[in-house]
Length: 312
Image (cartoon, rainbow, N blue to C red; front, side):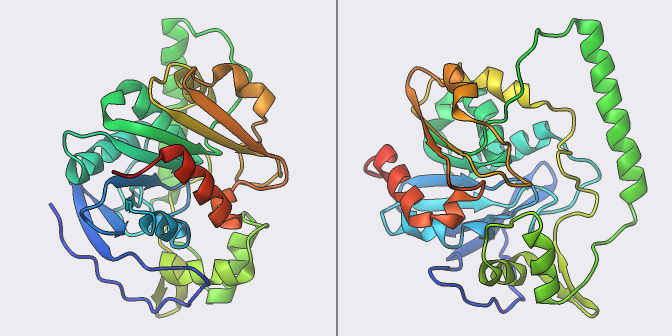
């Protein structure tokens, strides 16, 4: 199911930022997923998947660089994020199902190039391991969580862990069910986000407010569902993605950063080198932060385009 999205904001400008040429919705089992596209519809598809607490318009500078190189860039807002529907509960598995619905809609029966940032990279790692036929190649931007892998849990302990995670999430959902995000001016919302994105410019953060928040009678509010919480994607542990990484059978490029940031995973290259698949490579940038594609969009795009090869 597709229908046009209405853009009610008047975005501020930012150097190099280009609004998507197309907006529509995909029905993911009753949940409306908002999709944005840059580039010619006839070009090969490159999927971009944003991170937690973000939205697809964070690619407004990055995506056009790939569209100019001959790619049809497709990015969507995760459920509960941006212009996608809010739901009663959220989980990592639900995000995976949404990803398959979007891929079925934009590239049925053919593999596509994919790029995921942070949580988006973790989602795509699981999907690439489970359904490699969907992937032409895979770029993961600082989306390789690491904790020292331990032994697998016995079945009864796994059930107990799942019960604990679900109980905690339901209690949080009960507390936040009637909440709403605090309103403010564009400058105030940008200042709040700067606490999580300290390396990004005020000009960029204020631009993001006008494309990722809504203006109500009492001020601007981020569109992110108030029940969302950091690290709260349902029962999930960083080790899950790491275990799957080694088994990937598609061409893989992993990018890690060294600068410490509140939203970063803090993963170092030496911690995960042995998990990089045999047909993959890992790049490490010690002086850049978690949002490397926003800090250095041209450099990252050039590296990614070289890895992807010609779109045709």
